[in-house]
Image (cartoon, rainbow, N blue to C red; front, side, top):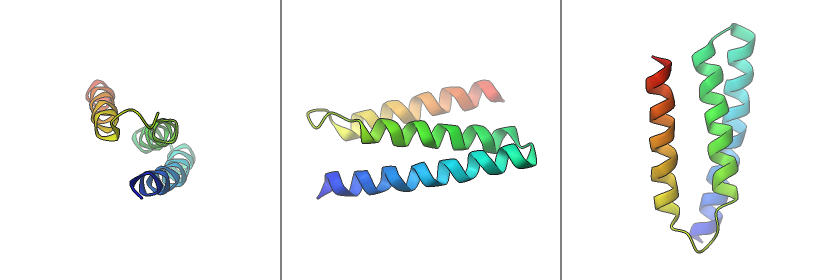
Length: 74
């Protein structure tokens, strides 16, 4: 059941990411565009997780990388 929940979350992130990325491009908002790209990558990674790996560990790594990127953007 948790796998299905993670897949649905990944699909939701993918859609939101595309919307944010496109909206950022249209409006010239680089931060929104970057947020959308990050959501897309996050969704791609979640959908490719090996069932043997801990989903929580992967999510923590993703969050850390996103924070690093956002810190550099500032």
